Image (cartoon, one colour):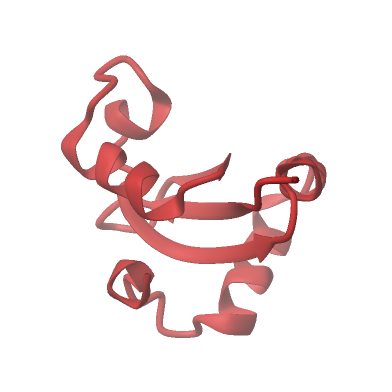
Length: 96
C-alpha cells in the first residue's frame, strides 16, 4: 500500500522567504518547523514556519514529483500558485 504525501510551501512573518517541502505527515512536519527541531535547516534559519500552501497526494512519489516541479518555478510563479488558493497568505496550519 502506498502512503500518501503532501507538498507544501511555508514562509516567514514578512513573506520574504519561500520554502517548498514534501512530507508524508504534513501536520507533524509543520510542528517541526514551528519548533525548529532541526536548527540548521533552511526553514529554521529563515523562520519559514507559516504554512501558506499545500497539495495532498495519494502517494509520496506523486508529492515528490510535484515538489521537484514547484522548486523549479521562479518566485513569481510560486506566488501565483500560493495566491490561487490563499490570496491573503493566511496561515493554513489550523486547517490541518
